[in-house]
View: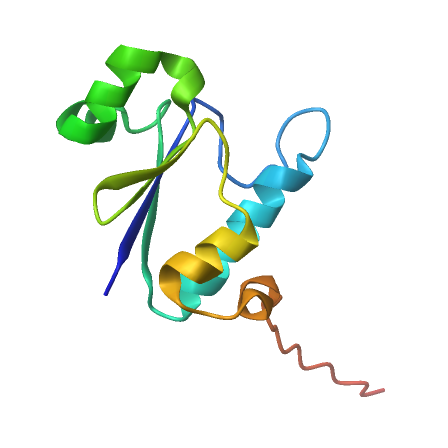
Length: 119
């Protein structure tokens, strides 16, 4: 099974809903990652602000950051090989890397709510 790692720049969270306005790119990536996690794919995000050790411990990430600086983030690895630098993967790229259909990355979480209308 392929392993995807996303090394994010420092930010308060990876959802894209924090701050003064919603970042649609971050919400798209968060939704795609959520869908892949639900399908048991090995996909992990690291936030420089919360997990700097992951950036230091990974030699590939460390080398890219030394060569290109913080503008290299977000940095995407598949099986510890750099596949994208300085931008988040599109849903099409994620689908190709993990051999899934793009539509599977756009599934919204299903929540069932029971409501009783007793008087």
